[in-house]
Image 1 (tube, rainbow, N blue to C red):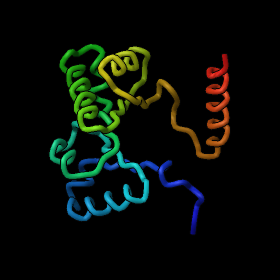
Image 2 (cartoon, rainbow, N blue to C red):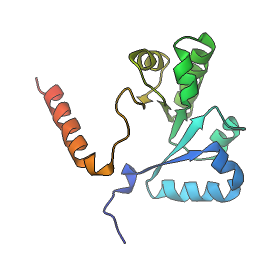
Image 3 (cartoon, one colour):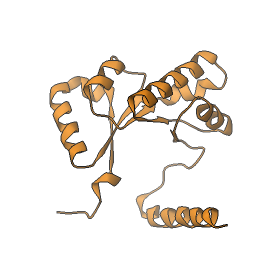
Amino acid sequence: MSSGLVLDRLEIEVTETALLNEEHDAIGDLRRLRDMGVRVALDDFGTGYSSLAHLRAFPFDKIKIDGSFVKDAVERPDCAAVVRAIADLGKSLGVTTVAEGVETQAHFDRVKKEGCIEVQGYFFSRPMPSENDAAIVTELNNKRTRVARP
């Protein structure tokens, strides 16, 4: 059955823990998904056992920095350095870095300063039911149109 979803609009998030259990099978599965146009994100980066090895072995499009680093980056220089290092690593590897757990303006400002390309968290919105999707997309498109006009 076809959903009508364009596959390059689909993003699968995979945690390092999930990869540890079935690493060999997962590599092939992730490559096949990417070949179909699906994007693959490594979730909760920095909290697993072998993050750097996974970056070499798996075909990721995004690295999602764990929210624990993001939350502490405002007050702790060592956590800010971790966020910056992961953002720099992502840039060097040609993958997008996403800061998870952005809940305040201070979190947002810090992760942007440290080089994160995308952000995610309650600062923007709490999770919503899928029946709200159409209205949200329409609202975002209207905002873009208003901003784009002279």
